[in-house]
Image: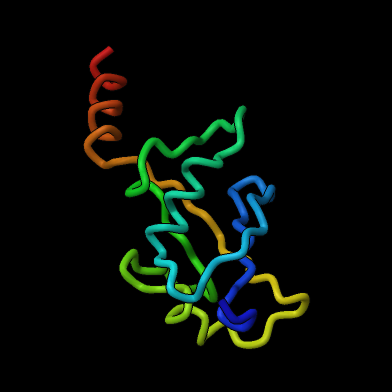
Amino acid sequence: MPEEDLVDIKFRLYDGSDIGPFRYSATSTVDMLKQRIVSDWPKGKTVVPKAVNEVKLISSGKILENDKTVGQCKVPFGEVAGGIIIMHVVVQPSLAKTKTGILVFIFL
């Protein structure tokens, strides 16, 4: 695979720590990136995603769609110093679980 088809990406977590950097093909999907984040999530964090659908990736102020490829998302990134793209990770727990937790808390 030609070197120019590879992209280095680092994932910035809510507490400022990072996962990566990892090298991805331009054909890798955002969903594949999220799977890697969930599987490599650091131990001991207070917020932990339980599934890929609880993870949102943000780059250049935009939430990235699961079916988009790294190559499609790369255009707004432009030239990056050091060649590593930093994507911010937001963990958004499932709404159904959150509502249940609130109801339990209110009635106790």
